[in-house]
Length: 283
Picture 1 (cartoon, rainbow, N blue to C red):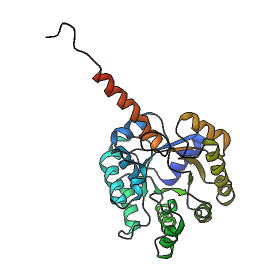
Picture 2: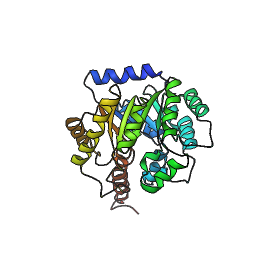
Picture 3: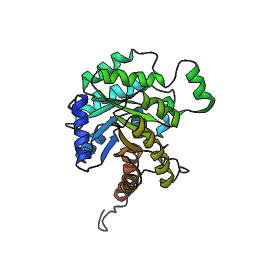
Picture 4: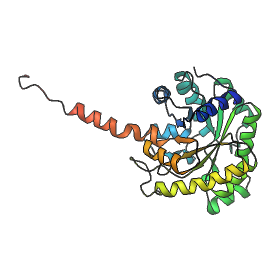
């Protein structure tokens, strides 16, 4: 069963890596076997997300943003039944929907802590929405502030906090509240593979956009760890580019580790088995 860490223990592990010039790697895990072998690969954080569940069922990540399942129930259930039992030492965090009007969020976070989660991440997030729909959410009491309040609750409960933002306004609102121990600018759906966004931005543009948000983070919340995520960040070489060209401390991986890592190898292995032949002497 995964070890639960206090917020300070968690942060100490991460800053030790950074101070020893080892970039951080945070990944999602959509099922037990993914968590088991991702941990063996030496990552620093494993995240449980409803999007991870959908990815491992063969669907695109955006399925986790649509109202076709209970996001918080999925994370709690697969965390308790599948992910936490397979992880030994790496801290595991829960991606929770802070705009969940059907739950007492503090009780949910307490339950997540009790079963072994060491941190909370605001995902799914309304920050992904924009335009009139996003404004309507805000105006009808279903806005981003709920997610910030959720992270504050997690912090009060001695859990590490991870904050997503997709735009400058949300980045400023999140960081001015000083709630994220880790700040992640989400650059968009990961490109590549069968359900990636083929028309995504270039790695160079992703780095420029990400750095603009890191500058805000350095000003408003300088102690926050900064991770890069999404869009053109698909390979280890892409991760190296982000480290070379931005002020990130590491990367967060979702589709690029859970989905893309298995799509082609699994297909190729199945095809290789199908290609075996009967012996010429077989009867």
